Amino acid sequence: MIDIRLVRDDIASVKAALARRGVDPADIVRLAELDQDARAAVGHRDDYRAEVKALSKQVGEARRLGNTALAVELTDRSRQLGDEERQLNEVAENAQNEVRQALLYLPNLPAADAPDGDGPQDNVVARSWPGEPPAYGEAQRVPHWEIGAELGLLDMERGAKLSGSMFPLYRGFGARLIRALTSFALDSHADEFEEVRPPTMVLTETMVSTGHLPKFEEEAYHLERDDLWAIPTAEVPLTSMWRGDILEESALPLRLTAATACFRREAGAAGRDTRGLLRVHEFDKVELFAYTTAEQAPAQLEDIVARAEALLQALGLQYRVLDLCTGDIGNAAARTFDLEVYSPGVDMWLEVSSVSWCSDYQSRRANIRYRPEGGGGPVLVHTLNGSALAWARIWAALVETGRRADGSVVLPEVLAPYLRGETVIPAPTAG
Image (cartoon, rainbow, N blue to C red; front, top):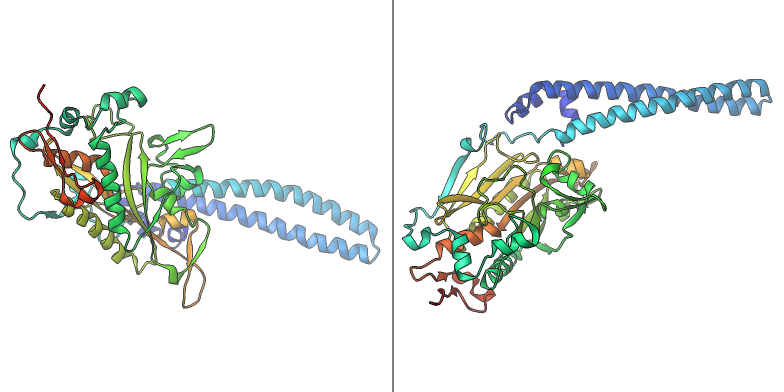
């Protein structure tokens, strides 16, 4: 969440920054009013606490001097003030909670260099690869769900039989391909990122820390009996690994990578790009995550984007990098770059990675700080995250791009070590 002190000290700048994200300036004014009321309530309560404390000392002094009547009078007065102080404390805590709730729903302040815009139509194409777009043949213009069914790689019907629509079931070479992609990516990041296998079910506080709750509750799967949430991305548990802790500056940047299943309700997606793997409730993804100082953040953002691009180039997939406008970046992000691959069988650009710098928005929620080497009080870390990569749509683009006229599919050579040397999915046999 944003720093409430910014609202107190320079409300005009906060209103201007969040207006770039479509936030009504009246919401910021209301937040400032709530904060003012909360501070007044806290001050009123603290005045009573101070008076109760002073009376306690006076009671002790009266008893020491043997003035029992005065001690009794002061004790009665102290009890009365104590009852009033407890009531004022409840008022103050409720007022502070209103401020926190308002802050939890507000998005992050956008970076100064994030392009302005209202939505996806205003995103900026930063670059594309390769420089000369490939020419796709007729064999590559077949959608992946048809290829998957023909070759026995993807069985959406049995996935739906087990779990309902939009839960894919991969079979044979199709399942091996997901596993190969995961191993390939994890090995590619092993030079600087520590591999972690976090839980896929997390506490409410863990979801709040990243900004997924309370605002996006309808998008998540909740196990109410245990009050646990299925993670929408490994970013969620990785962000909270050091929740409430103080790191040493020498440990930064602290880089982590994790391969997990991810779960998203995709509320409101019915009838919209839901065939095959275009939009699913469960998918596998390799996540890159980093805690940094503010000064380290720009370079780390570039590094995560570069790593995602390197994987796409190694896989031979046509892609483009979008610099997301202020109207399209996620709630917690200050700056975001999306990577989209072109999938010829569905003739669509598919998002396969979203790389975000979240400044100190998440760390303020999670209270993650570092101790500066030069001295001084603890400072909030900055957090960055990015997919490298999400596999459902990569899988789709690979089988469409790699399809040949005989119906076979040729996979990238970089996956050979993870596929026992096999990079060709054979064409279906006649009869």
